[in-house]
Length: 115
Image 1 (spheres, one colour):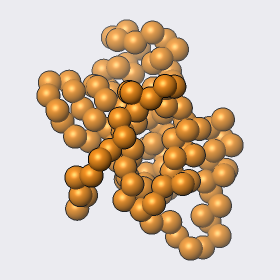
Image 2 (spheres, one colour):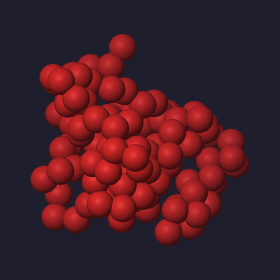
Image 3 (cartoon, one colour):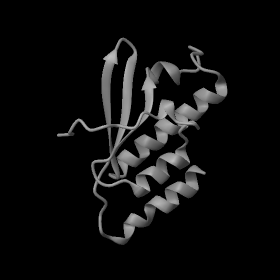
Protein backbone atom coordinates (compact mmCIF):
# COMPACT_ATOMS: atom_id res chain seq x y z
CA UNK A 1 0.00 0.00 0.00
CA UNK A 2 1.35 3.40 -0.94
CA UNK A 3 1.00 6.11 1.64
CA UNK A 4 -0.29 9.45 0.44
CA UNK A 5 2.80 11.59 0.82
CA UNK A 6 3.81 14.76 -0.94
CA UNK A 7 4.72 13.97 -4.52
CA UNK A 8 6.89 16.48 -6.38
CA UNK A 9 4.95 17.94 -9.30
CA UNK A 10 7.42 18.12 -12.17
CA UNK A 11 5.19 20.51 -14.17
CA UNK A 12 6.35 23.29 -11.84
CA UNK A 13 10.03 22.46 -12.38
CA UNK A 14 12.25 24.97 -14.16
CA UNK A 15 13.33 22.38 -16.75
CA UNK A 16 11.25 19.56 -18.18
CA UNK A 17 11.87 16.11 -16.76
CA UNK A 18 14.14 14.01 -18.99
CA UNK A 19 15.10 10.35 -19.05
CA UNK A 20 18.45 11.24 -17.51
CA UNK A 21 16.92 13.30 -14.69
CA UNK A 22 14.44 10.48 -14.02
CA UNK A 23 17.35 8.01 -13.66
CA UNK A 24 19.31 10.45 -11.49
CA UNK A 25 16.28 10.91 -9.23
CA UNK A 26 15.83 7.15 -8.90
CA UNK A 27 19.53 6.71 -8.11
CA UNK A 28 19.21 9.01 -5.11
CA UNK A 29 15.67 8.11 -4.05
CA UNK A 30 14.91 6.18 -0.89
CA UNK A 31 12.46 3.28 -1.06
CA UNK A 32 8.94 4.69 -1.17
CA UNK A 33 9.98 8.09 -2.56
CA UNK A 34 7.62 9.17 -5.32
CA UNK A 35 8.01 11.36 -8.38
CA UNK A 36 5.26 12.56 -10.70
CA UNK A 37 6.76 12.18 -14.14
CA UNK A 38 3.69 13.27 -16.12
CA UNK A 39 0.21 14.66 -15.65
CA UNK A 40 -2.36 14.47 -18.40
CA UNK A 41 -3.68 11.75 -20.70
CA UNK A 42 -0.44 9.96 -21.58
CA UNK A 43 -1.81 7.53 -24.17
CA UNK A 44 -3.52 10.34 -26.09
CA UNK A 45 -0.58 12.71 -25.82
CA UNK A 46 1.97 10.26 -27.22
CA UNK A 47 -0.25 9.19 -30.13
CA UNK A 48 1.22 10.77 -33.31
CA UNK A 49 -2.11 10.67 -35.17
CA UNK A 50 -3.87 12.84 -32.57
CA UNK A 51 -1.16 15.53 -32.69
CA UNK A 52 -1.88 16.66 -29.11
CA UNK A 53 1.72 17.80 -28.69
CA UNK A 54 4.42 19.14 -31.01
CA UNK A 55 6.60 16.34 -32.42
CA UNK A 56 9.61 17.11 -30.21
CA UNK A 57 7.56 17.20 -26.99
CA UNK A 58 5.65 14.06 -27.97
CA UNK A 59 8.87 12.15 -28.66
CA UNK A 60 10.41 13.31 -25.37
CA UNK A 61 7.28 12.26 -23.46
CA UNK A 62 7.26 8.89 -25.23
CA UNK A 63 10.88 8.29 -24.26
CA UNK A 64 10.26 9.37 -20.65
CA UNK A 65 7.28 7.05 -20.31
CA UNK A 66 9.23 4.17 -21.89
CA UNK A 67 12.13 4.78 -19.46
CA UNK A 68 9.74 4.74 -16.47
CA UNK A 69 8.25 1.48 -17.77
CA UNK A 70 11.74 -0.04 -18.19
CA UNK A 71 12.68 0.90 -14.62
CA UNK A 72 9.50 -0.78 -13.42
CA UNK A 73 10.22 -3.91 -15.50
CA UNK A 74 13.67 -4.10 -13.89
CA UNK A 75 12.06 -4.03 -10.44
CA UNK A 76 13.67 -0.72 -9.50
CA UNK A 77 10.38 1.18 -9.24
CA UNK A 78 6.63 0.84 -9.44
CA UNK A 79 4.34 2.91 -11.63
CA UNK A 80 1.18 4.28 -10.08
CA UNK A 81 -1.57 6.20 -11.82
CA UNK A 82 -3.92 8.58 -9.99
CA UNK A 83 -7.03 9.91 -11.68
CA UNK A 84 -7.92 13.53 -10.99
CA UNK A 85 -10.63 13.98 -13.62
CA UNK A 86 -11.49 13.48 -17.26
CA UNK A 87 -8.22 12.91 -19.14
CA UNK A 88 -6.35 14.20 -16.09
CA UNK A 89 -4.10 11.49 -14.72
CA UNK A 90 -0.98 11.70 -12.63
CA UNK A 91 1.75 9.19 -13.52
CA UNK A 92 3.95 8.49 -10.52
CA UNK A 93 7.18 6.52 -10.23
CA UNK A 94 7.69 4.97 -6.77
CA UNK A 95 11.23 3.92 -5.84
CA UNK A 96 11.60 0.34 -4.62
CA UNK A 97 14.20 -1.09 -2.31
CA UNK A 98 17.28 -1.99 -4.33
CA UNK A 99 18.81 -5.44 -4.19
CA UNK A 100 22.14 -5.68 -2.38
CA UNK A 101 23.75 -7.71 -5.14
CA UNK A 102 26.19 -6.30 -7.73
CA UNK A 103 23.34 -5.99 -10.24
CA UNK A 104 22.41 -2.73 -8.55
CA UNK A 105 25.12 -1.19 -10.74
CA UNK A 106 22.44 -1.11 -13.42
CA UNK A 107 21.46 2.48 -12.55
CA UNK A 108 24.67 4.03 -13.95
CA UNK A 109 24.23 1.94 -17.11
CA UNK A 110 20.63 3.14 -17.49
CA UNK A 111 21.69 6.74 -16.94
CA UNK A 112 24.33 6.42 -19.66
CA UNK A 113 21.76 4.87 -21.99
CA UNK A 114 19.24 7.66 -21.28
CA UNK A 115 21.74 10.49 -21.86
